[in-house]
Amino acid sequence: MRLVLASNNAKKLAELGSLFAELPVELVTQGSLGIAEAEEPHISFVENALAKARHAAQAAGGPAIADDSGLCVDALGGAPGVISAHYAPLEPPPSWLPREAYRDRQDNANNALLLQRLQGQANRRARFVCTLVALRHAQDPEPLIAFGRWEGEILQQPAGEGGFGYDPLLFIPALGQAVAQLDAAVKNQHSHRALAARQMATLMQEAWHLG
Image (cartoon, rainbow, N blue to C red; front, side):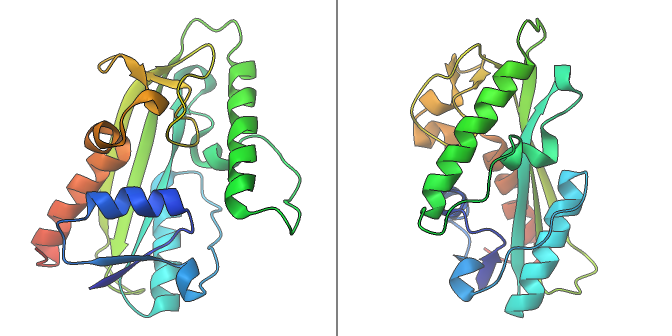
């Protein structure tokens, strides 16, 4: 079964592709099918994920899955939350700048702003949150919804070279490292997206009779 991922993020495609490796699905990005990104106007992860999944399913004419994820920091009332990817305001990218290069620029700005807003704050508890929503078709009345939460705390400065987004700032006490310092296999075993993906794989096997 072809499953359209409502994202154009190559790193997210690789991560989810690995996590769904045992399912009989071919995961493809919406961008590879010429599908534009959906609006994300909502204030919760689940509402945005559902909107993105319905948009992709409608445009592709078949099953779709959407991930809405981000970082929630206790001392900031849950911010950056659903605006995690665009927390720091940046000018639109110039036409010549590759998409991934702009993402890296945005990540660096987001991390710098987060550290600035947490300056002097003793409570640095935070978590990565992932919501996955899968639909058989755009009008599916029974969306599959899976959640994952990965608890940690925000470091005083970035650590590690791996991953993306806020990975260099979230320290996982249970593993003794920042997410960006973890081996990809370890991250795929423990991450918020891994937790949500395992739930989703079970839901797909049970409700969609896959596997």
